[in-house]
Image (tube, rainbow, N blue to C red; front, side, top):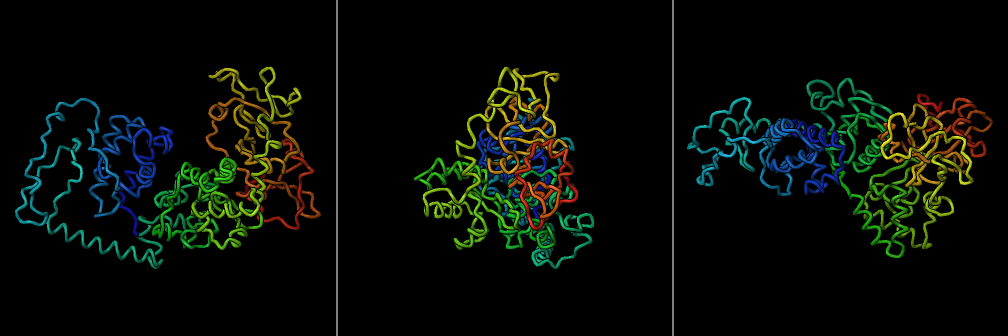
Length: 531
């Protein structure tokens, strides 16, 4: 499969911009537009263009598009529709007739002539009896395109299209085989092979090369943000794409992965969380609530959730089945990312003991003895320990007002841990004011001795302090080399990061008793210390 027409990408980019500005999820848009969630995602990734403009109009209206934005979207849809090849990029879901893209009253639109009834018997495009073409509309006019009305083509245009199609086929064969030129004119169509993106694209990078990787993953069906930041979400999707493409799944976008991204052999579309939850409950009919809670804790019900371990192995899919468990079950990473296979394999593991002992991390996290309904409580409007004394890191005062003024907003600072009143998840403000979340109680007690020092803050803290994302401290722990004095903090995404000095160690409240001794530490991140 070759790349989609550039008109597809321009139309999709316009949809994504509207969606990001409106800050709406695909589920919310599906409810507002009555269009399937998977269809909406295909439109935004550029893999499909709706056959009728009406679907795009409902999408844009739900996102609060202005009249001028609606007119622009209509033009982009018209160009993408005209660039469509037969049976390529056509969404099978029917859509209603397209409304007028400009919602403002227009007397001329009310009197627009309907197509003549004789149009059903119009001659074929190559017929010599074609009527003279209609004059071009004025430059500022918005063309009125009827659903599924195709432009007539002259024999010369048909011949030209055939030549272009043959050329595209030849390019596609070269792309699949990896024999196409790495530089030159193809760089415009394959930016990952340009001089700017000559090296591998990997975790921690930012910029246009990362954005191109994310765009191609989204076009292949992956649900992800196209933000130019190669973080944990992009690493998961790259690793999943490599495993599905039978490429060495190292999470690094090298030449083989670049070629596969431009000519993907499989789609990355998968089950939404609601379907995963429903299937887990049906398979684990003996313990449906516990199984769903465990799967949610393990993977957020994401079939493409992949977490690396300190020894280089990985956990895969809905129930985070490890490489070792996969070998025992006779499966592969591709199998583990199939939600049906993953759920049934997890049930086989569960059936051996009728328990969830194979998942110790989240089993402990869901235990009421480890995490109660309130880690800390409010006393007189400020955060405190359960004994009523203010914890050492609780200088953050939750606001009692539902809409605090800017003077009342005090954001947590690096070193502080906090939670919100209605959720037990603990957050840590790390170096550079970056926000981390502690995924479960096991990771928490790999770093700290007790819950003391966790502040309760307002639910508005994320919006008030401009935190739009939190990074996972996946498999977090403290370690040092045998015989060494330097302490490091490990998490699965960044490796070992040096804790620069004793003052910093105390600032975050890490416990010395939790430091694990290892014969060696690898990988050590040299460009991102914990300071």
